[in-house]
Length: 225
Image 1 (tube, rainbow, N blue to C red):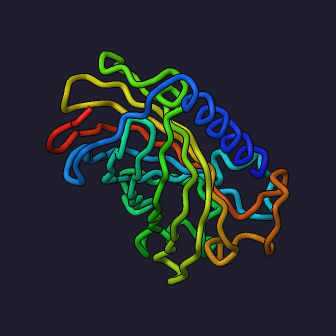
Image 2 (tube, rainbow, N blue to C red):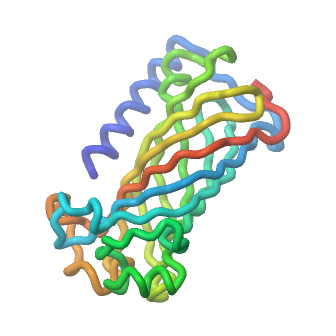
Image 3 (cartoon, rainbow, N blue to C red):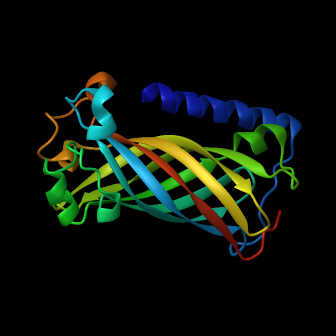
């Protein structure tokens, strides 16, 4: 995890330095411009400490829904506020799930599953390095993430940090398709009744979870660049 975060930071730092030498930075002109909303489907792979990482699929697999609202301050940087509701819908039930808080997937789903609320600082290496092109339909972002998790079945809450990357493909001025993935680390309270304490060895888990999501994005208001 540390290597992933350091790699993302080095990439962004290099790109920013290059962009300062070669490309002008485009800045949005209004607080009310360049907002968007997202809605999609989500899959996570739970990775509690002390468990065999190779068995996260299917023992740690859950499904859910996610929604987000974000703002692009410029083509190079933006913020996204995201809410994910996981393992709360019988339609998405994984009968092989074992590695979820309380240690009983029926109790976890009956208790409402779990919520993840996070803030992402989205950086676009493409626009940082190559400059913004209004005709370009696709974009790639990398992001550090911080937030809170709440296991509704056990009544526990935990802080969370992570990092990820993703991309969008613009259909028209309003609609886009997006997909991204991230890895988050949290505390042992989130996996109450499942893990065996805490630690940072990926091979035996580190009280974290992978997150994969796909969905649609709708641009609000006016785009000023």
